[in-house]
Length: 204
Image (tube, rainbow, N blue to C red):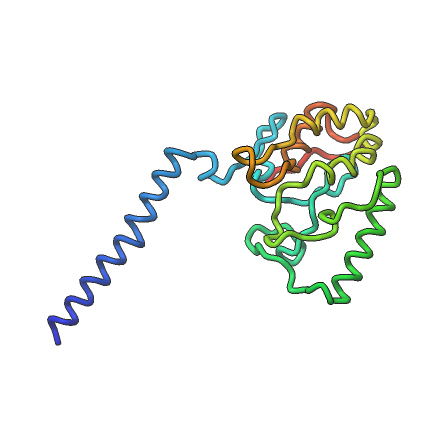
């Protein structure tokens, strides 16, 4: 019995050291050596202030009309909570979901009176994580007239900045073209300055 217990404890100790200490440290070391920026959270700095304003991998809210607005979020009580990543439990037959989407569509149309076409579906539907940092180029384009008006510049000048930040498919065939919302909003500030009467992107 003692021999069996000793063998079990020794196996547990070895397993604990290997899986709880050696393996995590090895993964951390490889990540720091090969992908240090991503391993540290893909943090994004505002070049004007030097402050960390977010992560390129985590979506966040933008209320000012001069900024591109992201997909809605069901992560956490107020959305965009990186500690509570997840979608809602509302299904396609949910009246609560239908009412929320209808209200969002009406609000977006009011806020974007010069937008062309229907409201893009992704602007009223949350991602599975609630933290999707990207939009499709079409969803960004739909918002361009509002952004241009809020910044007092032409829509074509805003579109030129957007075009610079369209990311292609990974490896040329994986995924879809996309735009990182935080990166684009920072670029708009660099090109045109902070929104008139508005605020710069706050540090995180």
